[in-house]
Length: 292
Image 1 (cartoon, helix red, strand yellow):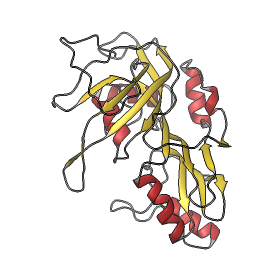
Image 2 (cartoon, helix red, strand yellow; image 1 turned 135 degrees about the horizontal axis):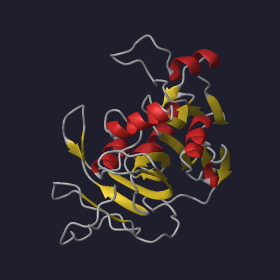
Image 3 (tube, one colour; image 1 turned 120 degrees about the horizontal axis):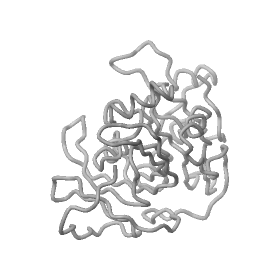
């Protein structure tokens, strides 16, 4: 597995983590190579992770080079002054854009914690393959912004609105996963950290660092005739205006679609995204059209 370097300075580096590579050893696997061990061996000094990606998730990952940098960059994540965007291929025709505001149970202590995910649909595809109970298979490519950063947040939130990520064995749809694995030879999970945007705590630069769509994704997109977004055609590092924490990411205007309410808790809901972050939408009087 190749670890591609996207950006580096004296304080940090941003790499493109390949899918299937663990960040650190865990209780189930202490022998396989990890991203941290490979980078430390290649560079000859200790490095510091300030956030994590699941083993099966690929994409942009920020690494600090020393303890001072680790504290400074860690503070960006804690204060939500760093913007994280993901790409995900999900089951069904997802709404054009929406917010999911639903608490998530933490594995460590078992408590429910607030979690917010914004997304917009940037491409759709339909295959003439029957997947029960439907005569065809529909898919959507989503650009996701995690307002909060909980463990498995995007995976849990998308599953809860009936748009699970393709290839996700824990929260996904078994029938669609088998279709991709057996007929498209795509056994991996379609979730990718696509972009990090932040103000550098030492230089003051406003950086926007993104990674392109990997070759294995492009091959599948071509087979299912899904349009590849031009903005993620290749890796990039660019400047951007100062980021104001709490402000919503710019979104492309698109027609609003009604999202079905799929939760059983009184505080759980999904609504069309309108740029507001704290107001609940009124509950629908009756069940609306479902999007498979």
